[in-house]
Every structure is written in C-alpha cells, then in structure tokens.
Length: 365
Image 1 (cartoon, rainbow, N blue to C red):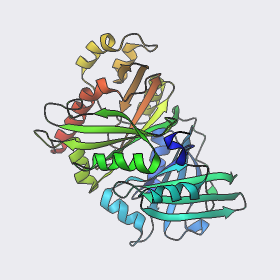
Image 2 (cartoon, helix red, strand yellow):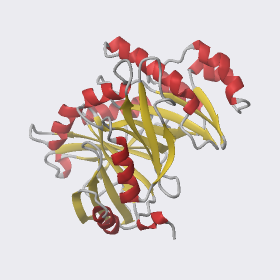
Image 3 (cartoon, rainbow, N blue to C red):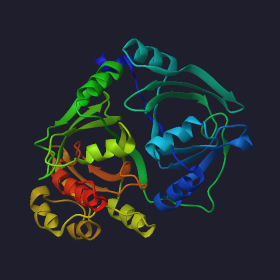
C-alpha cells in the first residue's frame, strides 16, 4: 500500500471551460485546434440555463459552456474571469469514496455524490472546490456507454477533422496569490495524497524584471500533474500578478497537451491560425549544445520557434500559444516528451522573456 492509495485516480476525464459564447468558442477550438464535436446539451435537450458543447481529440476532452440568462452562474463566471477553466474533472473508480476521502481531509464539497442516468447507463459524479472558482469533479463512468454524460445528445462537427495530433493532457497549471502556493501544495498532499515532484524557486524562474515560484504536484502514477505558481518579488509586475489582476483571482494559467510529432502539430496549428509566442534567434544558437542529440531537426525547431530541454530522463520539446482570449489569462502548451519528466527548466528564461514582451505591448509590465 502506498500513501496515495486512499485516492486512486484513473486519469483526466474532461476540462470544462465557462465562456461568454460557447457556440463561437466551440467553433474556435474545432477549427483552430482540430477538435471534433461529439455532444451537446442545451435548451433543445431540456437544459434551461446553459448550452454546452463537448469536443474531443485523442484522449483530450474539452467541454465549453455558456450561460443563457443574466443570473446564470456560468455567465457570472465568464463576466468576472473571462473565458476560463471552471472544472478539472478526474476519472475515479468510485466518486462517492473519492468525495468522502477529500472532504474528510479538509476539501470543501461543492456537489455531493449523485448518479445521473439515461438509456445508456449511469455516471456517478461529485465535486470539490480548489483554488479560486475552479473545481474538481470526480467522475465514475464505469457503468456508462453514452457519448459523454446523461443529458447530452450526440452531435458531430461540420465535416470530418483528423485533428492536429494532440493526444493527451500532460499537465494543468494554476496561478495563485503571493504566499498561497504552500497552502495549495498542502491541499493536494493532504486531500489527494499527491507528492511534490519538482520545486522551482524565484532564482530558477526569473528575468531582469520579474520572478515566480512554482511547485509541481503529482499523483502516485504520474498520470496527473498540477504545477502551482505564485508571484515572487521583482522590479516590475510579474506575469502571475498580471494574470491574477485580469482573472480577478486565482485560476488555471495554462493547459499542456501532448503530441507525438510536435513539428507536424505546430505546422498544422499555424496553418489554422494559432499564434505562438516568439523565441529570439539567440536561443537557437546555444540550444543544440545544451540539449544535445535529438531525433528532430534543430532547423525545424528554429523555423517553428519550438523550445527544447533535457533532464536526467531524456528530452522534451515544447511551445506556448499566445492567450486564447483577449484577457492575458488562459493559454496552451504543446509538448512532446522523449523520456523527460521535467517542465523545460532550461527554457524558463526564454519563455518568460517572450511573455514579458507581450506584457509590455499591453502596457502591463
């Protein structure tokens, strides 16, 4: 028995974003990121207060929901935070047991365990609160054969889309206020039995102007990884402070999605109009010596502005999109791992300087 056995996690179930206009957001994720629409719930299916579109690519499932009335909690969330992540849902063998363990260990319950059923079977759901307005829903779908959840009807995208090669969720990063990182590290240790995988100090993650601190929490099997960032003292406003200001509090900073061929994936995303952060030419002069031999061409990495890094277990390739909406809040990472378990420590400076250039354009540095 390991310490984490009280909270077995089978993996990611879905990530739900609450947005201002789910119909348009779904179109964006379908056409820009290559997701396929698989299900829908809304007034036509008997849901009165919201519309939700379910999108999939590989093992990644996004749900996009928007409120239909002024008093809708979905609409209030989108008004306060902008388009952002509301629910990081985790698949479990027993949602009631997961909820009970979490609440006994100090988590705040949001939705008590309950079964939802239709002609395709039943799903057990329960939710707890985490940082900001974000929740974790425990999903037990062992007795369900339907397309997503009861209440949703199958729906297909206009035309077949083979996707861009996104395979799974790698990690989901949270930004929290100064001095609150340790609180949430303790939360994931206590409530989920997670362990601290990596710790980055403000010396590790800093530029001339700003710094942040980060700790990465992971479950026993390494399936679920939750980095948590907080700002550190710097000469100017850090990217985390800018996020907290525009998000009006803590929330999900970025979602990292894996690919097995980052060159092809990034080329496909660029053709579809996805805009990535730019990396200066100087970075590519020193990266081959720092990272060493890789299967890919450094010329391709340079052309597409993909970052590379190596740790004791192997190497990784990664690239970050600009923000997915007008507020400088949620963005995405595309990552390809070749054994490496880290998060691109050697790229932090290049990445943060790229983010600061965007901040400066917004007048927020």
